[in-house]
Structures are given as C-alpha cells and as structure tokens.
Length: 244
Image (tube, rainbow, N blue to C red; front, top):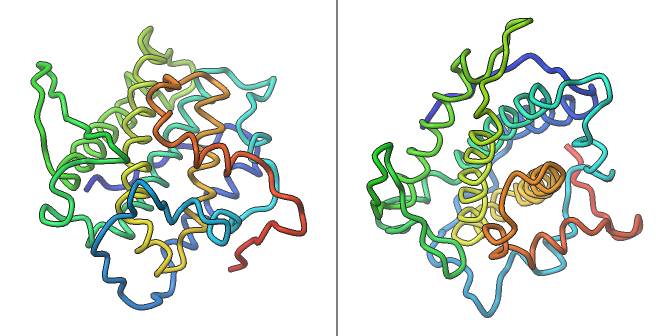
C-alpha cells in the first residue's frame, strides 16, 4: 500500500483540524477484538443503512461548510489540498480493514452489483482482486499527488491544464475504495468501532465531489441510498457523535 503523503494546508483551519483529528484517532484506535469478516452484506439487507449505524458520526456540524471554496483561495489549490487529504484519509481507513480484504475473501473489486476492472496506462482491462485493485489505486494516486508538476506545492508554480481531469480520475478511484469498504467490510468497521469515522469520511467526500462536480452521478448512483441518508443532517437529538 502507498504511504501517506502530506501537503501544507491552504484552506480554513476547521477542515484541516478535523482531518488531523481523524488521522490521530484512527492511528491510536483501540482494538475491540477481531471481527470474523466472513460475508458482505446482501443486496436485500445492507447493514450500513440501518439507523443504529447511520446515526453514528464523529462530528455534529454540516460538512458542507468544510468544502465551500474560500474567496481568497485559488480553485486548483483548494482541489489539490482537499484531494490529497481525502487520499490520505481513505488510504488510512482502508488500512484498518486490509487484513480482512484478501485475494480469497475479495476475489474481485466489487460494490453492490458492480465489478470494477483496472485499466493500465495502455488501456488494457484487467480483472483483479480487491486488494490488488486498491493497491493500484493508492500507488497511482501517491505518484500523482507527490509529483510537483501535477500537484505543485511551491509558490508561483502553475497547475497543469489537465489538472481538473486528473482530480476527477483520482476521486472516481477513491469512491470505488469507499464503496468496497461499505459493501464488503462494514461489519469489520463496526466490530472495531470505526463506522462513525467511515460515515463521516464518506459524507465529507460525497459533499466535496458534489460541490465541484468531480464524479459523474451515474458513477456514484450505486451508493445513492447511503449518500441520501448520510448527507441529510440528523436532528440534534438523534445525532450520536462518537467522542474520543
């Protein structure tokens, strides 16, 4: 798996404070015991849609406030900063269940009734296991976000003309990883008491890609039921915020 990369924060402090706190909590999580992680939830009954789980979050404010472009920030810089942060967080979230995502348990990269295939630089289509697919994703994104010609960090250096296209590609791949975690490894996330982090991360990511039209709605439609639930603010009395 690719190692985490970092980028100097360029947005509002609250968003980056939330990201740092999420990283810190996941790194220092206490094990609740090993989940067995046998079968993914079925199409008829999705555990991640049950109210007792969807109401668990790690923040109690509107995440849309974190993604709106500040007036003093360049759009490309904002996209770069947030995309890099989401890469780090999703990479980390996947790492918490990676020992249960193997070539035997996840023989294909699936989410709902969708099987994702990997396309190499020459456009060759390959069906691979979920851990192989995720490794391809994280390695590619790591390479892109650490390339100074694509994600410049030095003052005055311009973003490439194809930057937004690359950001959209990255976000599409990251969505696939999140969708697979929910579909195949939500039980493990619940067993480790990390579903609140997963719900918050997913909601934050969906709000971000919708704000800037970064992923085709047809691509994310397989998770529309979850997106609708999580992106609708809960009444204060029902919002169960996990305290750490």
